[in-house]
Image (cartoon, rainbow, N blue to C red; front, side, top):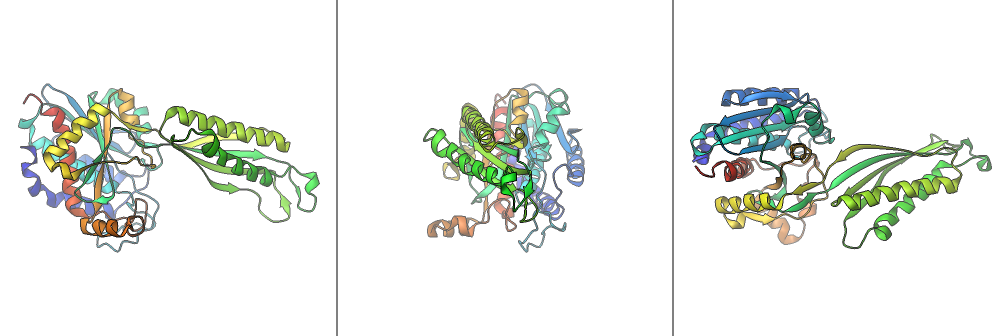
Length: 405
């Protein structure tokens, strides 16, 4: 049994987690983390390849059979930690505030167990440690660096993410589970003038304000009731002082959708509204549109999700597996299985002390009392989160690789 040796391995897995939490690294700067992962995988007997700068892939071939790929993300956030943990970040202003240190540690644990339990499965097991998830660039960097040609083509791909739900729980769902996200930088142009001479200007501040108001109608009046869309203007910047009308304004807009057709409709509406308002204001130049930090839809394959969910329920008990609600957060994991053209499932891993979560749930104060991902207070409990995370990866992999053994 592959998981029979888990208890004996948890000591070093906890140590790796604490070490990673102390030494977080920002997106595309994960050199120390990558070196640690490479050394561990090589010691476990994996064929190790660096892909996409700080991305690491380990492949374990074990005869004929199916191929499974499991992914963990590795980067931290520019957040100053406020948890007070004994293993808190030692890097000023940088913290593993999203749990990627938990993801790396759990997948390394699963990698060792799969290597030591080769008599229980056959095929190939690929573990992929992806950088720069937080900026939506890491999976693309690995794909662009030839990932598809450098590792065995998987039959299925898996990923998990620690979330502010009770530790010991797993949450799965078929279909969209994480939204697509598009960040859009829009620059609109006016004609600058002295603040005392507005008649000599085309005021881009007024123009941008009109755009902000009109954008609110995309969800309320152009999106079908029941369909999901979020349009947020997170920043509006123009000018430097009160008595100068500037010649341009910049808006930063974020869009979240669960459906590619809805996404296309929303993006088209944004462009139409911006261009229309510019025309109405007499803007001397066409607006500029620049996309950045784009994240694809995470859309779990129903058959794969059902198979993995059944395996979780059989191993952990049906009470430990719940149906995940759709999350408005976003991820770039799906670019990896999409590049191979294979199905995938992405599940949620509970990380909150069960007693604390139960008490907050009873009071209806979960949102208030439980720190969410990206909070400076985000701190998954090590136990049982790490153990469940390791087991989840192994159980998911064996649901495909142990068939016929």
